[in-house]
Image (cartoon, rainbow, N blue to C red; front, top):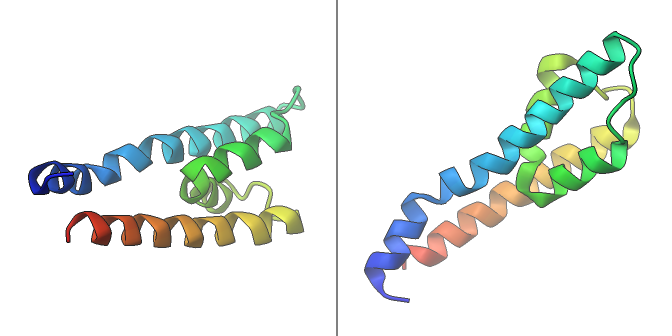
Length: 99
């Protein structure tokens, strides 16, 4: 990969990874809305899947902002851990591209 292409990708990496975060955040918000009105909920597996697919930071923001899934130990451990791993991967990838 040439230097110009790698700099372009590195500078736009935030936008590439922002999309799954926004989608996950909106899913957490919608699930909280559904829970409030006692409607059929979004499956937890889908919330975990979107978090795993580089949306963990959005899931963490959704948990904090909406106070949603904060009593579930599986979410309290998994989502922040995934967010840390994903942020580290993004940083490493960006450093690699800027070499």
